[in-house]
Image (cartoon, rainbow, N blue to C red; front, side, top):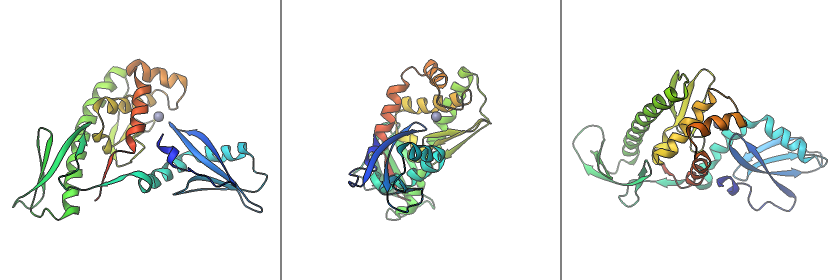
Length: 252
Ligand SMILES: [Zn+2]
């Protein structure tokens, strides 16, 4: 859904299309002009295929498909520019933690480094300087990352056993839209930003990545594995897509 924001309102000379890359539906436009060499462009206008007047849709699509990884990475770079909201500790805006809104306030403290304390659905950041936003936000992100990691480790251990797969390493990314990835050697990478979404959705991402250790693709066989461990995957996938645009972007 979020990707519909890209490439909206194409100019009359540009043709709007859509293509599926990884798990996403990515809109793109084709722009033809005389003597134009074939190339891909991604910026605030989204993904565009630029080429000569006789460029066919099929040629454009195959160019897009052959640059899938590059496109996904680039789109991630541009996403926050388009719709992520800057989040700051003001005491006004709550921060979702595993899907539950938490209030975040600061409290002046003499300790050298800032420290986060959780009291039910409230987070209190003890800090020497409540106005030192960068330092305070970093401490908060650090705290969120460690909570994310703790939950990921627990669920990966659980599902790896159930699904009978071997995970060799787990690391955190800070991607805003690409929630997880994995290598054939069993190295799983998950975005710590998942800490904001309900645990049931995190479990879907975990099952999805672990299923890739059996099927390194998105074939019907892959989805059958996902389904046998996470029957409601379709709704989870949809919910995650819907949430992406609403997640806070903590400025650091
Ligand atoms: Zn996948």
